[in-house]
Amino acid sequence: MLNDLISDFLAAMPLPALLVDQSERIIAANAEALTLLGQQIIGRHFATILRQPQVLDAIEAGLRDKRPHTARHLSNDGAQDTTYDVTCRYVRGIGAVQGGAVLVSFQDVTHLEQAGQMRRDFVANVSHELRTPLTALMGFIETLRGAAKDDPIARDRFLGIMEGEASRMNRLVGDLLSLNRVESDERVRPKEQVNLTQTLEDTLHTLRPLGEEAGVVLHLTAPEEDVEVTGDPDQLRQVFTNLVENAIKYGASGGRVDLVLTSSERDPAVRAAAARVQVIDKGPGIDPVHLPRLTERFYRADNHRSRQLGGTGLGLAIVKHIVNRHRGRLRVESELGQGAVFTVILPK
Ligand SMILES: Nc1ncnc2c1ncn2[C@@H]1O[C@H](COP(=O)(O)OP(=O)(O)OP(=O)(O)O)[C@@H](O)[C@H]1O
Ligand SMILES: [Mg+2]
Image 1 (cartoon, helix red, strand yellow):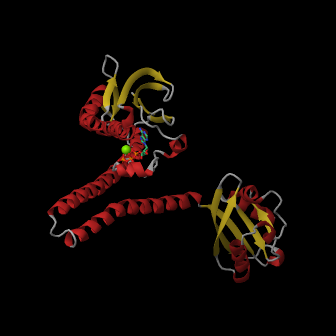
Image 2: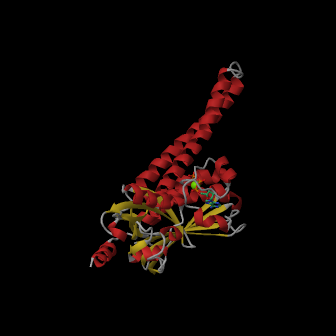
Image 3: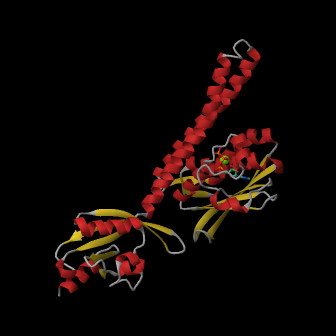
């Protein structure tokens, strides 16, 4: 009778849970616990099943002092690591010689752990990115006060470099803020009607001087009739600005960047009417090993070159979030030496 009641209670618990009594054996366990620890655990000594010292200590302490204890349990099912918070609580009057038992339950905290890790990585990355230009600025200030004090030519040159470093920091902060903004309204669907043909023409017009400076010709191919999508005009302009800027910066050796706009009544990628914009360069391309991580914040395929060109490593992360907000897709295809193709698919 009592045993039935205990099993029913355990079965009703949404977390893996089991009971260890004063005989130090597992006297009951729910289906979730059997899945986690194995089907043959009932009747076994708990130390043969739960081998992690922290968890063993917590259960032993609970049996002894009848107070709550917690521990971390790490498990690996071969494919991935899972972290559990293990809670041990004493239950009176059940188990061998009615000596009471410890209820051991497992809460999966893997996602919390990962979120915490991501936050720590992000703060570390931002600090690192800011520190580099800041260190340079501080160095030059010192030089200007000392060695270069009475040398107007050196002073001018240093001020020029300092301006560059300061604007790099400014760009970084600007990019972080815009990433933050895009992320915070990612769930709100944009509703404006945007003339995509016009947006692309404007983008190219703005970036033409940058292209000329790098010896790159920009060219747009679009259908006769203007293509319209539902979207946020400023954000879409930012998407194409970032992609064309990259194509100019990294693909300059190819001498040209092509934008190709097409429109279809049923695009297989989004299973709906959609517009596609391809940004094509003929530069050195991107090693395929980098492709899966390219849209991560601060990820750079060619670290040295990107920094040298003043990149913050946030451009594609912003693109990705904006495209997500539009329920669109971003595809990257590239082979080393063959240039790169960035495709944005936007449902109409
Ligand atoms: N067209 C391209 N050809 C070759 N490599 C590219 C191309 N586009 C992007 N990359 C690589 O992807 C990386 C990430 O691009 P992203 O735009 O996110 O950052 P960034 O250009 O370094 O900095 P930001 O755009 O914030 O100034 C770049 O550092 C570069 O190594
Ligand atoms: Mg970029």
